[in-house]
Length: 399
View: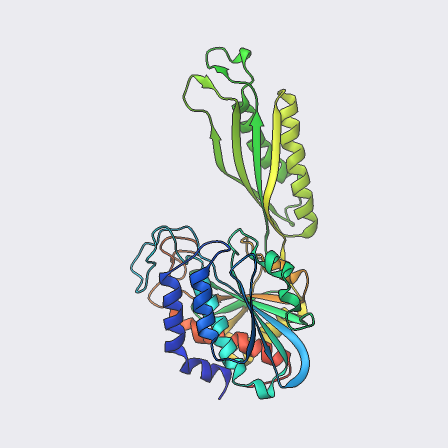
């Protein structure tokens, strides 16, 4: 049987695991219940399993009986602080928490791939590292797993790494998409705190009002983008949070705003961080105010290796048909900490359409929305593609 046929036989088992994960979503780096479910799903397989020290990660190594290199497969496990809405058959039982980005599907697919590959271990020429990762949603779980040795878990660095990510809209169900080069944006969170001197709203000359200066900074950051960066190497700056003051007639001592910055090349990623700080410091100096900046979160650009992206495309076309694959015309504006793996290993990040068949993908709720829905029907194909990529990269064509 092919991987695809074997995965189809696992459909009900995969759905049960995904539903269990979806009902009990966990946030950040500490996912004890999720980790337990993953370990239970892997129980009985010939795997070398190691748990994370600073996070609830699971690293599992499958060693083929034939000599060969190592390949890594990544599945993220954490949910989002979102209250689920809608009419999905299976919903979160925990208020304010939801698998709104489909990580429950990724985890399930990766566990399924472990079963598929373990069943063919006697013909596997090399090793597979299964990277079950917490903390993708803004907690840099990949960074911690790399620091704890996930890339060296098999005794040698992988020659390739692959990650799948489902999308709840835009893509038709079952469609795979990737591209060589930049696949996902770099993302930075910039926090700016402007400090002045408080006073009475009727006498602003006796205070140092931080609000007008902070507002000027917001506008100056937009001008910085349009006048300082090439339109063909885009940068996106969005101020999503602005807080200052307590009432209308009191000038506050402090104003604070938070910015998300997206870029698509290493050069722009580095330069926009520097320029943003220069801009806000310049405005603060012009008004005689103090300013403090910090970047608490930063993801680099997710850059797919060209050869690995081509390999993914060829594999999908052969296994699922040419109509199931499309080359992305441009990068996605979301960000991924799989980018940290891409910086170390030739990699490919692949998206899979998981919009339910009864919804129009052009109108369905997108990832991170409270109404986002993902169809269990894609679980077997995702698991099979993980397995196909690893097996073919290691020299086993089981299809």
